[in-house]
Amino acid sequence: MGAAPLQAQTRVQGENYTPTIWIDPDGCEHWVMDDGAEGYMDLKLDRQGRPTCHPVRSCAVMPSDQLFATDKYAISAAGRKRLTEFFQKAGATAYIIIGHTDSRASDEYNMRLSYNRANAVAKVARKTGAYVADVRGYGERMPKASNATAAGMQQNRRVEILCIK
Image 1 (tube, rainbow, N blue to C red):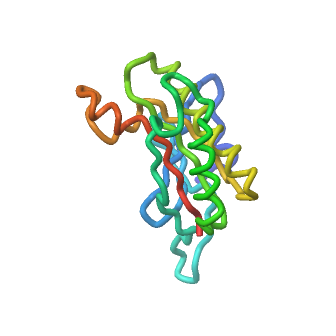
Image 2: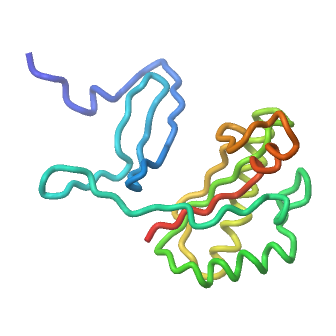
């Protein structure tokens, strides 16, 4: 018996799934669903059938405390100046802006705050003529350090800028 067409295999009715997007070390964007299904976002293959992707690297990590007041997403004048200079000199083809928070507020609040902060940085990037491919907010879900200490929480409050060359 042959396999069902791809469209029929991927259709799920009556279920709510949450997709997650992640970037592997080769710069390939993947999607994964709650049930473990996974695939490439923009699959291109080389002659040997291996996926080829845009090189993506973290080209800047800006501590949120240097850009925003506590619980705010309006960028300070000094933060705007710093970001403008960064985007004018970075020279990437495109950018992915990712916001992160510590764990002090609710997950829902942190997801919204991190997205709003990433979006504020993206607006500065676009004003310089930079192409922003995506804006993401991960809230407290991807900590760099423990949220058990003030120093750890400070490291987790950040905006990452990924450069696509």
